[in-house]
Image 1 (tube, rainbow, N blue to C red):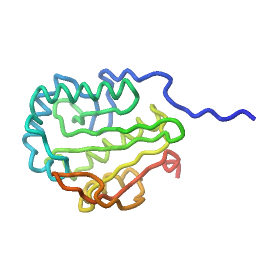
Image 2 (spheres, one colour):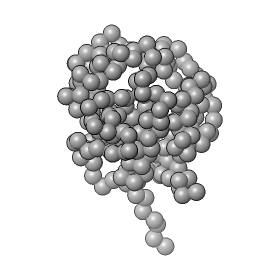
Image 3 (cartoon, rainbow, N blue to C red):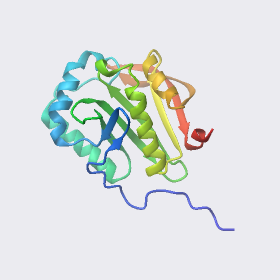
Length: 199
């Protein structure tokens, strides 16, 4: 009996300026011209973001650092290992955050990890829930992935809402899971399988 072939991309996606369009947000892969928007958003929200992120490097907000970041994003997309998106408003003139699909595993796994951040002024408005929904649709429909995973700090209720709004199910608790602000921090673990959306 013939073995069923596992679906995966035959060739890397050419993301370019591909836009994932939603009702209130649009997602587009980062471009060098986005640097002024990105640096302003990150600088204006530095204290807010640093509560949930690894330690920032001394040159975190430099143009050089941004260029290197884009180089990594592009390499990962070419190798089908990750896809990065900046979150914009519907007019594409206000950057609000980012949503990434990373650590993509093919073969028998067909899974990836979802991560995201948003400026404080844009939080708790349903914008990130919509953005993560667009990333999930891209992962399942375009990339053919089977499972998505995500983690959030135990006290990050807005992030939990984002995941639950997109039908992620809580699967566990991971002590000292990620190093945030220089300290190993416990996280809650969530996952979503493509066939979960059929129910």
